[in-house]
Length: 418
Ligand SMILES: [Zn+2]
Image (cartoon, rainbow, N blue to C red):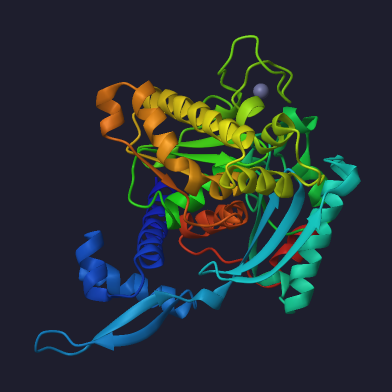
């Protein structure tokens, strides 16, 4: 019984730290008074917990504002330099690694094209490890101050068991099922662990993009939304009541492999008629057949330029793309009743400005009227590197949830020695 009440007190304390840290993180500079008003915590609790967070170096004072007649109110903010986050995007054509401070300001980045090796597992693992070393060494960042590494991958991620190692959030045991890149149950967490002792968090790239857009971009403020990743492939992150909907084994949201044509074009997943086989950047460049450059990004840019110059073939292909996307978005609207749909990913952001009006019109004509009237369709706001930012939100989320559990210097070495 004593054990249990101790546990409860500790949980409560951690819960209060998490509530205040999270609120300060997302709402910016606030006074103790405003924190109390917004969170409903008592003045005494605010005072104690904020005192602890300041003593731990997680929160700092950031000026003051006058209050009506009383003493000026001190403003508080999360200390951006208290720790570092790393985001990794294992993309379709490159591996990007970026180092961020706690405010998600990018401090350094390293990009490695996949070149001739494709998604050969050992090669990708080496590129990630090289990228980690590059961003840390180029900035002279102490590894002990890195809160964690988030990795977004083009596949379904089966999370490991966090109970296996309490200092690791399941990352070591994460297994990737990437059917379109021939990754069959790849133990990515274990393979990376052989080369780094930083805490690892692995998730599907569309889900990391979704979290970034929901936290900082076009999804902000929406409780029910779908964030679509439109790149070489096509994916989605479905947000239901504020949290990503994962399904039984985390594969929910594989929107790119919903069917737009029974018996249609062969998809990279092995099936036929998938949305991705029609509108994914790789499929579009292939269907156009005019791109001389081997790079997909250059090919898609050339297709867009041709359409802008009134090339009838390019224009027709993009009109058809808008209709496929709009019809598939109508499916999302009918299935999930989202208030917002956000189109992100490098191809989505490249083609979006031209295609958005036609995508909206097609979605309207294919969706049920009532849910469609409640839904807005927008472009992502975080740019083509949003997957990397989103990957960094994985360790950030754990940091905020834990109420600011920062690894102490030397702790990881201690663990390794045990
Ligand atoms: Zn498919």
